[in-house]
Length: 189
Image (cartoon, rainbow, N blue to C red):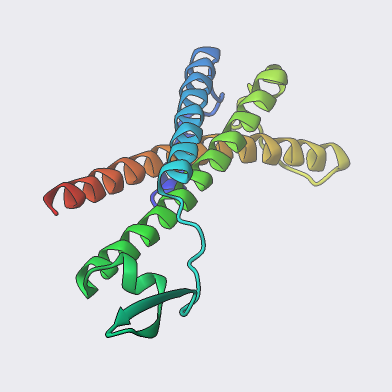
């Protein structure tokens, strides 16, 4: 919710748009974060992926007692988890990893969209460098409608660049803080 007002403020305070230095810096930061998040996503999937659990009764255990054999069927949960607290911790860890993967995946997609917007801005720099406060509309004509649509497109791209970058940094803070929180709880166990 903070991204919308901040993006709107950036749009209003920068009437001529972004300069090349800011665009290069933003693209570099986004590329680094996207690479970092893709690495974290691959690591999380590789390290914490748990294959689907087997159904109850998949394991049979035969015990011999006084020349008689008893058959028992055990579920995988009864073998792996010693108690209910350990089982709860395993479920919480699994749900955390799922949420972490979704947040990292969302951040990668947002970062890629921000890079796409920055690339559009750089490719058509002269078009997007138009000062949006230089225009006044007195009468409605075809050229004034075209100018309005041009200004609307310029404003939308500028807004989306700042919105996606703010969203990316917010997601970065969420990812790092949640990972530190999870690791500190895990170490305390």
